[in-house]
Structure formats: C-alpha cells, structure tokens
Length: 82
Image 1: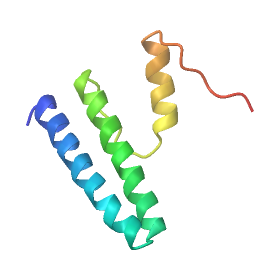
Image 2: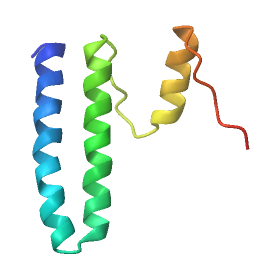
Image 3: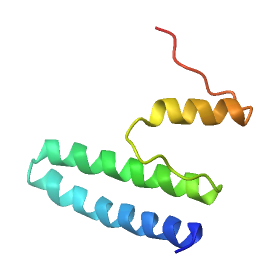
C-alpha cells in the first residue's frame, strides 16, 4: 500500500466517523462524541502527514513530534508560553 493509498484510507475512515458523530450526539453520548472527534482529528493529521511524505508517529505524543518536524523544516510553529 502506498502513502497515497493510506492517505485516502484515512480520509474515508474520518468521513465515516463524522457520520457517526450525529448519531452519538442525538443519543447524548457526549464522551463518545469527544472520543470519536479526537480519532477524526488524528486520522486527518495522519492523512496530511502522509500527503507530504512524512511517516506519522506510532505513538500518541503528537505535540513533540510536530514541534521537532517544524524545527527541521524551518517552520514558525512554537511552543505556547506558560
């Protein structure tokens, strides 16, 4: 399976999950809505990374991963000030 195939697969999965959100919301399953929404964001992020040729991390620590990629690519992403 190529990066393009995987990216398309992530897009289909995320759009399928979007359809499920309405049902969960109608049933007032709010914690499930949040969980599925988080999964949708993760799938979309994986798709975007694959589209630009970056292998998504295999762990859930996205923040440090994105910051390190932005530094190596010369982007202007920075840590929020506390």
